[in-house]
Image (tube, rainbow, N blue to C red; front, side, top):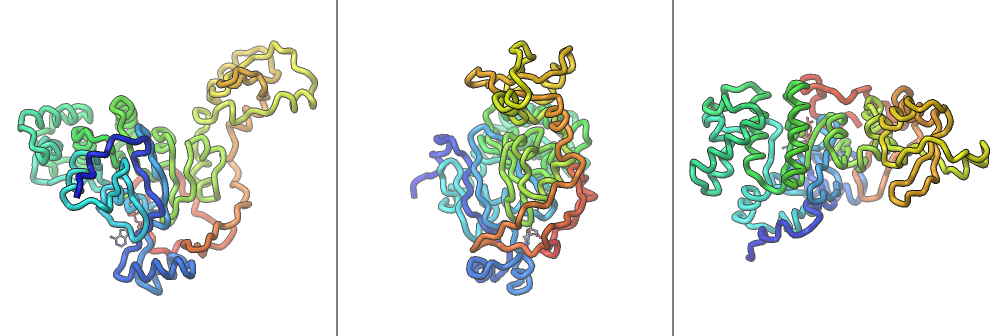
Length: 408
Ligand SMILES: Nc1ncnc2c1ncn2[C@@H]1O[C@H](COP(=O)(O)OP(=O)(O)OP(=O)(O)O)[C@@H](O)[C@H]1O
Ligand SMILES: [Mg+2]
């Protein structure tokens, strides 16, 4: 067999998942066939086949250099999904391609090479060897690659400095607190210096302050080193802060994929809306999302004078507010299209106020019909659904236990 791994680095889409299903249990194939034929619910699959649906028909693509976040409640299938990318799990159905390499087609040696040289992972439960020193844990991927002790210790120490653990390098991993072990896991992934990073809730055990620092540091590193990152979180605020795009999961299904702004402005259903409602939008929403056509405005209110304050269509709501506050006039604001330069849009002060509060107070109207497609996992939730008012800043200790399907 040819060495498939050499093709990594050639294409723009780096991670490509198509129709991935993961059903846990001895009768997974039978369950899969029954779902395709009869459209069972997760609960029915559990009752009839004693199988758990972890991921249901998930598809997404991550582009080179992108930070792609997967977000959802506990038990929604985030870890299960990400573990397919480096074949820690094999899909019941579907395809996993990383830089045009079919991950399922790799033999054992090729898979080891991919895991060691191309895809690093930060595990949700840290994944450290307790009786190795912190430095040796971080240096492990380089040890497997056969680097000299000097070279791997140098790289390990640089990565430990980034996560502010230089003083702890000679301690055993088990002597560190949970948050510190999480930073060691992060340092190991950074030191491995792979083009793909899989990060399963890498900051969940950290204090808010260090969490924010590491988010900033990580975003800086990822863009500087052109990393392609799949980043798992249960915190939409974190996803919005660091993600170029976000996929939202519920009970194994990806219910929405989009940029932070798209998700905030057009949540696909009540589940997404419930997350979105607590998010501050002034740094996310841009003028183009609030704009109304100038011609329409002029028909209703008469022609504009032409000397109105102007903002660019890509300015954030915060920037628009700052400018509007500094402007003496309370009239409409002209919006100049960033690409064409045309001033064909208008924002009023009311539009600005609506942008600030949109979706933050009232529950989203339950106008979305349940999505039922043939050959898919069917949900047996009642409609309209009544989601628990669980918000975005759940700490691990307050998270729900993994569901077995009863919450449908
Ligand atoms: N090895 C396994 N065997 C059986 N069921 C599993 C296994 N791993 C995961 N599951 C089930 O798959 C579903 C998704 O679990 P997963 O760990 O992917 O959720 P998660 O979104 O990562 O949750 P959390 O935020 O708590 O980490 C759950 O219903 C879980 O019980
Ligand atoms: Mg998980």
